[in-house]
Image 1: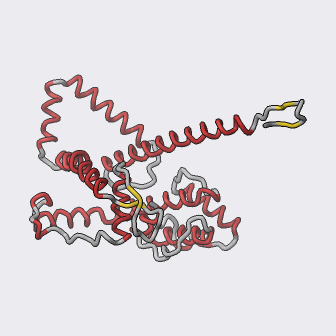
Image 2 (image 1 turned 90 degrees about the horizontal axis):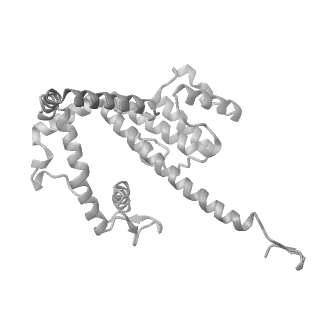
Image 3 (image 1 turned 90 degrees about the vertical axis):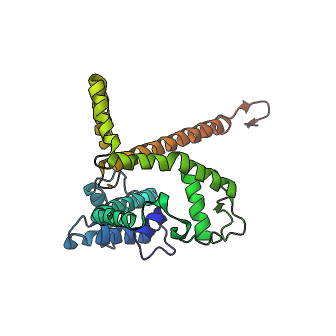
Length: 286
């Protein structure tokens, strides 16, 4: 994910980049601040470029605090910090170009019609699916949709996952039945004068008490989620709310994994940290 974010931001030193390398880490932070984040004025960024490790660490700690980053700049946390900064930079980039992107999408839809009405000749050309880059992207899509991927055959990376035909069919079914309909319904509700917006007041008129309770509950949930640090902003409250929920679910999965790891460690320690003593044999343990 970190390399994907840096590539989308057009980071110029991505080849051979290692987030765990202190020099690479500092160079990436400085580049993000100078070109994307711009939290400080130009004359206030000198401390981030300091060659002195102590001064650099102090400047980084203050920088993350000023950005309200929930992560600490510890040595083993560099990748997570950099991913947060890159996500924050992507959010800022989107805010800067949100109107242009929306206008371009609307203009394209007016010229060629909505995508569901495109003919086969209007579809963009398919990429070469035999390349490692495309296979890795398809495998990443399967992973995001929780579809199992097999091992790549003939890939340059022996451990790379491959987008198998069966996996792609499952991913297509997931997109067609769950993801795309939900996005279409969300877009329909956001359109001014849409039926979805008109149906809500009608339901509220029929059941004012239930509608008021639902609205109050929704506002309470939104207020609670707004206190959770997302790390970036899309400029739209609904999209930020959905991203916050996804991040909370991701952290929940991480906590469940940590619980399993802790349980395994405890089981191993039962055998290694409490050896039995047999005095007749004159030794400790078996």
